[in-house]
Amino acid sequence: MFLKRVKDMEQKKLELYLHIPFCIRKCAYCDFLSAPADAPTREDYVEALVREIKRKGQMYAGYSVPSLFIGGGTPSVLSGEELIRVMEAVAASFFIEKSAEITIECNPGTLNEKKAADYRRAGINRVSIGLQSAIGRELALLGRIHTWEDFLKSYDILRRAGFSNINVDLMAALPGQTFRDWEYTLTQTVRLRPEHISAYSLLIEEGTPFFERYGEDAARRRAGGEPELLPDEETEVKMYEFTGSFLKKHGYRQYEISNYARPGMECRHNIGYWTLVNYLGLGLGSASLVEGERFSNTSNLGAYLGGDFEKKERQTLSRRNAMEEYMFLGLRMRAGVSREEFHGRFGVDPEAVYGQEIARLCTQGLLEQQAGRLRLTEEGILAGNYVMAEFIK
Image (cartoon, rainbow, N blue to C red; front, side, top):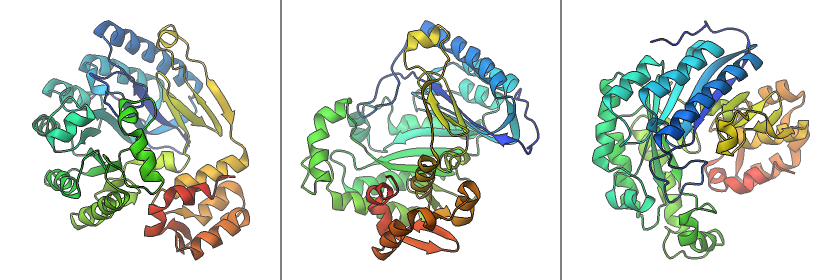
């Protein structure tokens, strides 16, 4: 393993995100910045990403990195050699903490034994693999390139390569999906005993083929009507409630609205995002939040390949904006928002800023106060959009 890490140090922290904007085929529901690309384009992109890593490493030399997340797109479309080059640049340019969590996203059908071995060699210690469903017709509907059997092969490759921290992504409330279908996918996944499971409800996003097919149906459901193709609201709620109880029975703790982990295996990178830790995005279109300034990279591939690594869409968060984000992101965590930590960050208690909102939500049974923390109730999670909106003025 070539990745050289420094000991955990009392420096300012900076999480890293590396965006790989390529995939084999665009999924029908996906609105992420990603698309298929040929091998020369991927090679040019790796070269540009390495240049950006080296430049940004000099700019943020005073920070240590507790976590790194390689996302996409499908990062596993890169060759093992290309990924190693990227990670060598990271190791040479940033102070990676000894205990750092280093994650890569993979899709079944793009992984083999050599790539898995290269990931280990590069210092990657966590893999997030996109299953979405254990049912073939659902995978085909989503536009996924893999089957359940492909996923099992990829999962086995990762285990045999020595990975002991694997997340599996699942997707609920799919068109035509029944409660029993969702139960089957969860059951099949749990039998493999991954350390972490992310379970999200499908969002119908504008600009995707799914929006053209199901956009009106989704709007009908949001308005309280009866959808024709998507599961109705009652079924979606039933799926969500079953997920929590079923996974709890099998040893998984829900630590965030859509994330479940075995004890001690929570995703540190995501927790940092939900608690407003500094994070730096590297790669095409990636977003950053560093010392209260939000910015992003260019989304123009030609410009990025040409060396445009300058900050775009710069916005300095006001104190009020920062408090809003701290509240509505922190409330996604099942532990909720700590009064002590809020006061330490902003110099006031949450009630001094949101006293009326907190009192109203507690009276409505959507928020509760427990052991110095404000957290969503079960009813509050189901009304999450309404609750979060209360903290945005």
